[in-house]
Amino acid sequence: MTLSPSKHTVIDYLVQVKPELEEMVYKIGITRIGGIGPRNARKLINHFGSPKKVFDAPKKELQNIFGIGDKRLGEIKSGVALSKAEKELASIRSSGVRALYFEDDDYPRRLKQLPDAPIVLYWLGECDLNSATFLSVVGTRKPSAHGLQQCARIIQELKPFNPVIVSGLAYGIDVCAHRAALENDLKTIGVIAHGLDDIYPASHRSLTKKIQQSGGLLTEYPGHVKAEREFFPMRNRIIAGLSDATLVIETKKRGGSMITADLSNGYSRDVLALPGRPGDEYSEGCNWLIKKNKAQLVDSAEDIADYLGWMVKSPKAIQSKLFNELSQEEYQIVKLFEVEKLLSIDQIAILADLPQSQLAKLLLELEFKSVLTCLPGKRYKLL
Image (tube, one colour):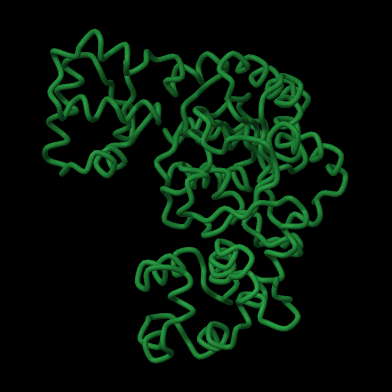
């Protein structure tokens, strides 16, 4: 006989019905502990082995963990955080939203590499979050007619490369990028700074329905959470980390787009900027990024595709041509570019599990053999 959840705890009921749902309660639960951000949550998970083991850990052992005060300890041991997680799981299961845990295969792999990546993402849509090419597009909420025209033109030109266009669903350049993607049959993802129960701004609700059918909506916030001012800079790190590069189209020297560009540089992701006329208020940010070598100047889709290596030969072609010329270690490095078209030296070191000294020699050899080229910031792509 099936147990009724009214006579047992929700978690016990989930164990009886579907064991993997129990595990998800703990995964969501660790994000509902007040004051525990992604970095500290990851430390707890790494220390104890899993979210469930964090909640099952003895009180004394938890007290020895730096940053776990009495209030947080109370939320862990009292069941408050798990109770919130149970309600959230029930809500998303009834609305078609998926919860993606950072160790899951379908969690965005580009985002997973970041130290402050969300532990859980809430996803509503139809799109492969690990598609080959992702481009974030950001800019001012008050663009000029020229800025809107250039945004639409570049995305239209990008159609042959089939990138997923990521933006923040805000007024201005963001919404222009989403609409241009939809008009050109490209997938687009709106990263929002609130839960999925509502849409901000409300005027974009009809647009989000189209986005869900050809892309999706992504957030780290539970469904009921309303937009708050401080959530938008946090949202920007997801926009920066989800893509191969961030394209900035019209922005002041201060604002959300510049925060996203700074985050992208900090994550060793490429930043691209469309230049504007000197003296124009909303060209100052892009021109400054280019001037300070914090962004690559681009003015066409071809510039973007060329810089990001979207037009490079496949590793299979290189294998047939140079197989006898590459050592086993060199070929191991080349194979990494089947997944990522552009990799920093630090990313290669981690993925290839090689010490920096040995890796530097191998990369130099691959440059001499005209297999790889080195770009500013010690980033590499196939020739």
